[in-house]
Image (cartoon, rainbow over all chains, first blue to last red; front, side, top):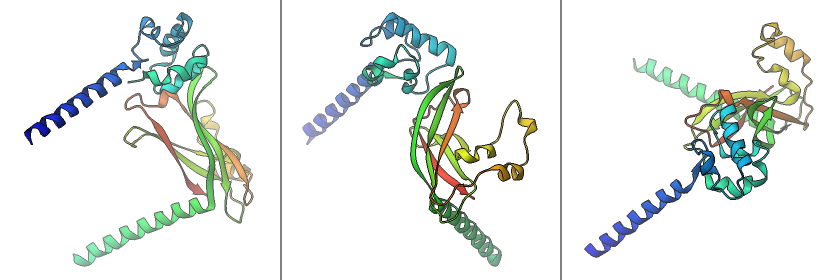
Length: 87
Length: 150
């Protein structure tokens, strides 16, 4: 019985930790630097500058969908939308 | 005392019943047949705009269909709320900023609105400036409902 409790507790801990890592794996586009953004697939310097510029002009992103408003980023939006977060 | 309490309770029940009938009848008289929300840039300003079509489902013409848009957070709680009208009745909306002082009365505005015929569909669009949307908590989705049909 004790053994089962330990197994369940261990599985729970592993599950929580992996969830945290996955959440942390998403890049926060409200705080990311140009260098951070460059780690995203198909991201170029111009695209990264576009994101930083949008943030400066319009304030922090409220939703990830706002990336579609940046002309340079729109073509790769589908490839990066699941890799980024706003909080 | 007991009679007073009972009367208060009855009054409350009656109020709730009347508002429920109001909402139900608004939903029976008109329907949202299509809707979509997206971010847009207009003249350099960022907006979240919800647009689509409403339809007069009643057998008689209606002057306007009034909608309520709520931006909701992850828990489903409204973080921002606004109202709008079908396109033909957009003049009924409140004008803010320049020109706000030159507005005609609601009755005057209503006279100028072209009614929607029975079964007719009309476009609607409700836009919210990004400056007005709370940054925290951030909204995740929206809810849209018909609140008045006249």
